[in-house]
Amino acid sequence: MTIDEVCRSFHIDKERLQAYERGGLLNCGKDEDGSPDYGEGELRRLGMIHSLLNAGLETTTMEQNPVLLDEEGNCGERVRILKRQRCRLLEDIHARQRALDSLDYLIREIKKEGAQR
Image (tube, rainbow, N blue to C red; front, side, top):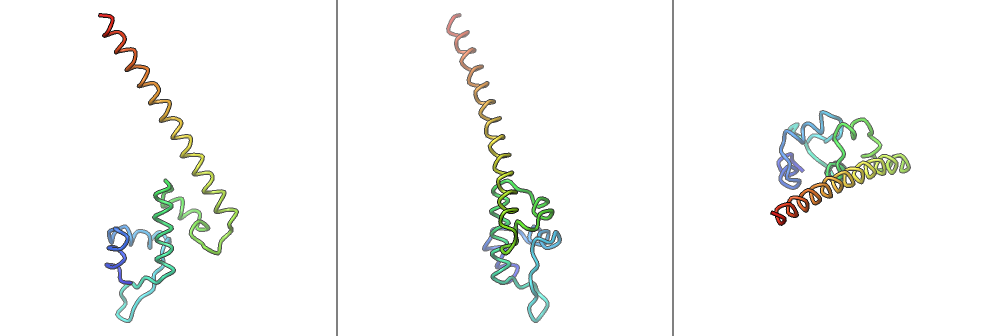
């Protein structure tokens, strides 16, 4: 698949795709004229990168933990890293819920004060 086809399929710009390559996240082949040629393995890897990004991981985390993108890699290590991210997301959800609860309390109190006037 050409770089343009990959960009269209994954809704990604060329600069980001090239940044993944520079960071070592992707390693595409070349066709006869030297243009990048993305094979099935790299497309699966790009899909995994997108899933990890959607899960809140950053590209630097993937670069520092290449096992995340290695389908043959240490399953236990991959799961450990993903569980750690899951815990971070849950902590964020709980913090946001506390913020919502505080806002709800303030709204309730302001309305109560307004009704008493």
